[in-house]
Length: 424
Image 1 (cartoon, helix red, strand yellow):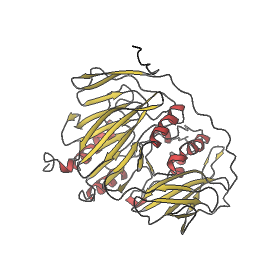
Image 2: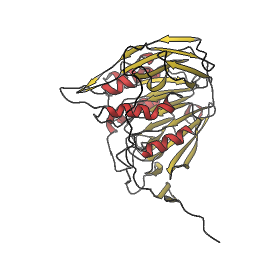
Image 3: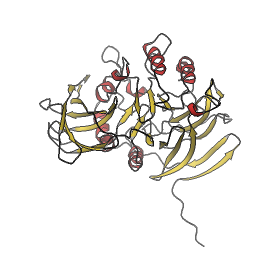
Image 4: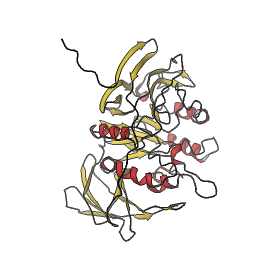
């Protein structure tokens, strides 16, 4: 009998005492995507993406070459029938010799939950549509970090698009522009098909810093292009904020903002956690860039100081899950606290494997630490579906010869429903 043909990339996994280890033969690296000059008119909306703002509102962001375009969004629940409209604001920035297009930010709403809306930007151009998240469980999140703009990025985005997610969560390192500002524009074009139809909630990574001493400030491009609902959550900075969707409270922290006990971010986190009503939002998720737990040899110890300052706050608040990026690999940990297995600690997941230009971090420490349950250096994305107040399902999908292959999955019980942890 003829053997079935094997894909160019192959894998075998061994169940070890402390978890899975996979000997995955990775396909070769892929090149950066190339983008032809965009020939849109000066008034055409470009790089359209949306993000959640408070309860029942959405921010629409887009770029035009001309400022002779109103920052207006017309919208409605039927194609071509725009019964509502809202006005926004324009910003732009310069970076050395580069001058950005005119960046429009317009908040629309109130909107109904779990409903498709059709919209047009600036009173001109094509019609877009998005679906609002549900107001109650179940709700699904796509989770991916360190995207970049390579052929692997394109594969990852295609797989995510096939997942019927409600919100995308991105723990930093978006465009990998690294001072080359035109790459922010090409990234906006690349993600527009997804980011214009579902809300993308992001936080900053090290590749967003882009500071040139005496010439530019940190995060100029990130803050101008990817405005998040920081003011609505009482934050003073776009680098850290929170939002609620369905029954989930999500906190986006800044690995590259001050986080010591006297910092604005630390004080904001304390206040934010103290206001959470776990009857209203029984699930609590935290996202930042540099991982606190990491058995990869890359970026060892870079999150230690932030962990020392903030992990006690997260533990006391019974945070369910923590997502990070930065390390270009996938790793899932058991519930941990202070570097020990703890049934009342958070599950930490590193997912910095979206497809960046720097390649994968393929070396892990040996021996395999007890609190690391699964680790593999491959590009891919994660899918989190929270079904009810007590149970959620997480899965990681590897980009295997352009096919999304589920390699790791686990059912998760919320800590607020844990008898072990309720009397902490």
